[in-house]
Structures are given as structure tokens and as C-alpha cells.
Length: 123
Image (cartoon, rainbow, N blue to C red):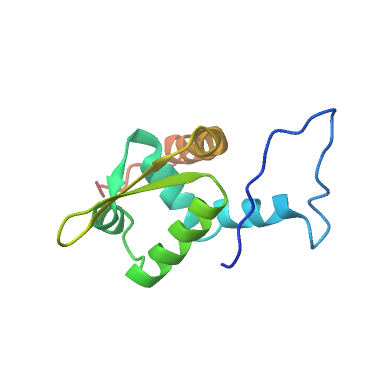
């Protein structure tokens, strides 16, 4: 996960060609739908979380992969990051308006899938 793209609303109907390998929108889609990116966006849907709260909520993600995913999502403008100058620093993450907009269909997908699955007993 390298690089990020700050996408701004298209003016005059301009659309990105997401099928082209150099398209900046393609990077944002890749980051948002990556193995861990989707879980970050879903986890932050209900509110802001600190790094370790995110790590604990998203079972199976390593600190390294979570940090990489968050860095890409912040660079893309989907997630904001706030650092409290304490010792140790307290870092909080939340969704930007763009992140909330991108995350809505992901939440809908998540809700549709979980409504269709039989109860597993896992909470």
C-alpha cells in the first residue's frame, strides 16, 4: 500500500478512468477495499477509535498492516488522524466526510451479508 490520492469532487462531469493503471481513483478504491482497509472503514463507521482499539476490534490484523492501511486511508482523505501530545502519544482515527460516503456502501454490503447468514454463536 503505497501512495495516496486526494480526490476532489469532479467538476463538469469529469470522471476518472479506473481501469487505467495510472488512475488515482484506482488507488483509493484499492485501499478502501483492501483486506484491512474495508475493516477499518467499517470499524470507524460508528465512531472514532484509537489505534489499539482498532487493532483489538479487527481481529487478525497485525500492528504493521493496520498502520500501513491507516496511512494509505489517511493519505487518500478517507480517514483523519489526530495525535495528542502525551507520553506515549495517543492517536485517534475517524472517518472524513469522504470516508463516510465511501464507507456507507461497504456497511450496506456488510449488513446484507450478515442478515443472510445463519447465527453462528460468535459475538
